[in-house]
Image (cartoon, rainbow, N blue to C red):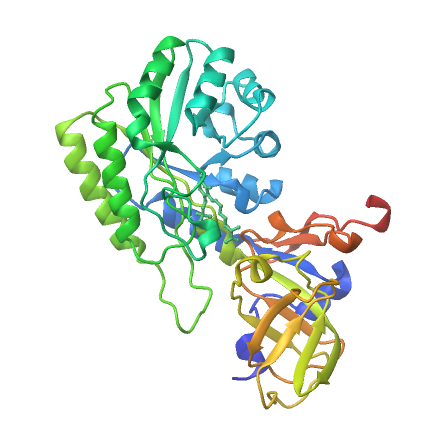
Length: 404
Ligand code: LLP
């Protein structure tokens, strides 16, 4: 493998770093639009909408593109609803999926006429108090779970999310006592699946439940559609297969019941692959026979490797022309944060790095900037967008020390 094979085709990495600072988040508009289109046309059933799960990335300029592509959005907090409205989403295109939220947070959504999903009997009653006579969506815990790490599996008896299926009669009673109508059911089995089985089984189960609740007008099967972070080893999720399987389920159901609205809620699939992080090699050393390549991308910039042991492909862009040569043994790529767990990649085959070389962390558009922090009092990096016309636009300024 040579340097050129590893690099992000469109970006002049060293130039971007010089212009906008290091580290830097870079997004590709065309990739983002393509992912939106793939999902929007996932099923043939006409009453189908995609809610982009904005927790993955709430940059307002990206949200505007996603809106332009015809997706709706979900929100987990007033902050997300606020940013979505800033991007131009109207209330009817936003769904607030609360988990242990406060009365004030529910009130924020009620005041703006935003559809709310509650995920416990206690939150249902709280919503009843402030929105008597309103409509509500219930988040079910489907027990079926999936995900790339135990921390992101959301369906299952020990997961904190959703109402137990056996408690639905109780939920109905609470809703009745506040004259509320249960108009929707939603669920989310977890984050990152590359095989369709669990998702489709959970979707079938949700439809079965919907058949017992005649007031339900919308079912939302959740997100979790994965991307292959290991480019060589993992195969892409077969969206065609997923679409067909969902279409079959929906067609059978609608034939027997009523023309229900179907929604899905992907976050990662929409934004992961349109984003990269650029960074700079700051120090190299060999200690006790282990190579450490130090760089400026710490877990303050990308927490996924430290938090979930996640894998991201890394490319090196040498600052000066030189022959491609790999380290004779796998290396540690580590950041500037004062913790031993600040490891971007471990046991990784990398070309020999020098101080000043550029780095690319691939597939960083989802849960990248969204989970970045000011830990160690480091300012948040800038975000730039490579537009369809090839022009580069800054979509978030880097923080300065003053911002801290
Ligand atoms: N809907 C609900 C209710 C969710 O909780 C989530 C993600 C999604 C949809 C979107 O899931 P996606 O399509 O993105 O898999 N920070 C972790 C992922 C956490 C996902 C949390 N919930 C990561 O970096 O892998």
